[in-house]
Image 1 (cartoon, rainbow, N blue to C red):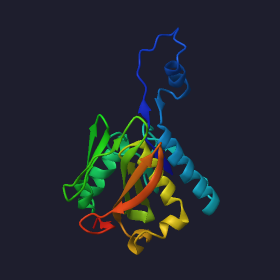
Image 2 (tube, rainbow, N blue to C red):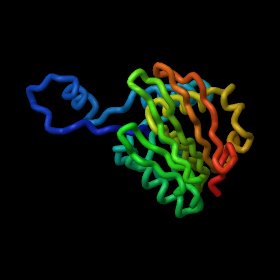
Image 3 (cartoon, rainbow, N blue to C red):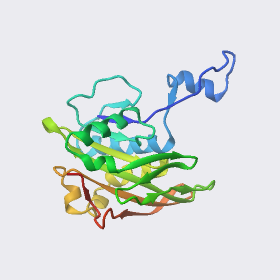
Image 4 (tube, rainbow, N blue to C red):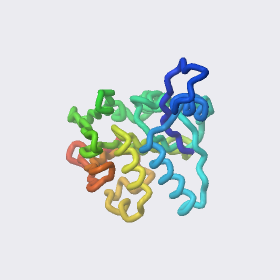
Length: 216
């Protein structure tokens, strides 16, 4: 199952209004997703259909559907995702205390990410869609054989880039061996250099001098 992060549209639209906002509100039941979220989702769905012969179910984070005893991939950060905040708090108490050492702070430029080392990662994308963005990728092995994977970009560019990288078999081979083993629970950070909206360079930033940060 894949969960995307939805953003609620403003309420109080005039009934006679035919603007894009009103159309979007009616067409999406009051919520929408970013371009980066949509593209990231497209990469994930295409990967599962092509290489896993599986069509994953897609839900929004504003959904009230039960996710108990299900493996889940979450696109988005806990700064915006309704369920992800709860997941992090719960699993930090149930065997993954280091998970709480990552902190997200909403700003006017998106979301800043603070690492367990207290290093602050601040995305900076200008009006030409040039700059730097970051994404945190977390994988947790849960009870009952279930797994939780978080793909949390500070902004939409890194969310899309991270999903694209994680569905590229050639790129995955660059990851440390322990990061490629789904039995391991841990995290890594991607830095994406963006030019005109596209990634021109992607690299892994070490956390405490390690490319793969164990959450045990």
